[in-house]
Amino acid sequence: MSRLTAVLDQIGPLHQEAQQQAAERQNQLTKPAGSLGRLEAIAIQVAGITGCPRPRLRHKAVITAAADHGVAAAGVSAYPQEVTAQMVLNFLHNGAAINVLARHVGARVVVVDAGVAGDLPAHPELRAYKIARGTANIAEGPAMTRQQAVQAIETGIRLVEEERARGLDIVATGDMGIGNTTPSTAIAAVFTGRSPAELAGRGTGVDDVGLQRKIAVIERALYVNEPDPHDPIDVLAKVGGFEIGTIAGIILGAAALRIPVVIDGFISTAGALIALHLCPPAKAYCFAGHCSAEPGHTAMLSHLGLEPILDLDMRLGEGTGAVLAMGIIDAACKILDEMATFAEAGVSEKSA
Image 1 (cartoon, rainbow, N blue to C red):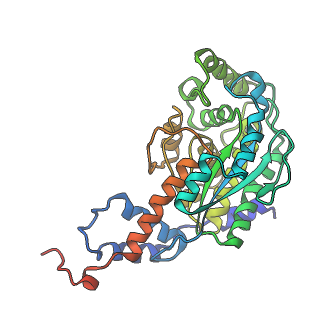
Image 2: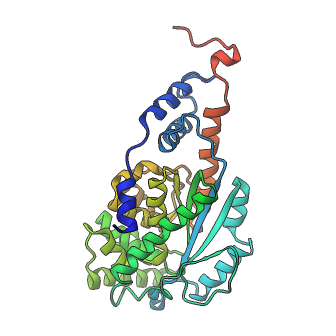
Image 3: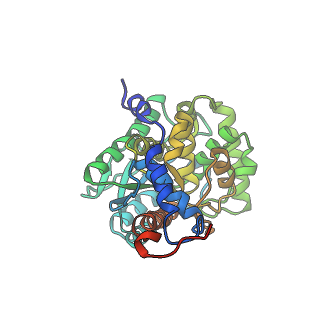
């Protein structure tokens, strides 16, 4: 049995008794019932995920996977491909937005080379799981082999298992890869049935001509490869990316270990499309961190039935929106655990 198959078999429903106990405690806290809105539902969901009626999220991590894309040669990004490797070094030197925001919420940043085109120097904080030096150009043929697609997913599963051994109560997904909004849009088009023109955005900031070129490249990729929407691994292999597959694996690995997973923006949600079409029950373990400014993201979230926690007009990636939302999820759990009940506080409850 493969690691992927074994993990899929482990993913089951949420713990109903823990959810019931969490809901009962919510109703006993010193506030009008339902007055904290989605914070209450979030905490109850975490209780169901973890099996703990009063969950505590002490150990937080964001796993930021980096990889390159052969389609960058088609001029779909405003930045050169070398930026992927340069930004990985920036992550390792704690200089990126994800480092700042992760520190803010008390999360560690796990940096992964899933398929960067260049050589990266050895670093104690770099997880070197390079599958290949970037994908092939999806406008000309498949991004990767089916075996590499499975390898990417299993890399994400392995990363979650390794982080669990270090202590992990909640995990966020992050990405880095010049050109990766192009394969993400292609994945979104396959699963949502919408056209690339409806879904494609400016990514790193391409101009009008660049956007039309990007749309044409995605249309060409879908025509050339004919990805099968009923076979998520085929979709990943045909038009995906190594970091997208790794993110799918993070989601599945977290669900199998009953760890809440916070999905970041457009690229991470492409990974979620792969993961949740492979295993629909894994959705119960997911939180959509935010709604990206990329136009296709709303359609992706709607297709998955996920409601974003934040909407701040962000489109950076790296896991930035997810770690900000992680702070909200942590706050929701602290309310459930630390707030006094009416009985504890000696406060009169609502009159009948």
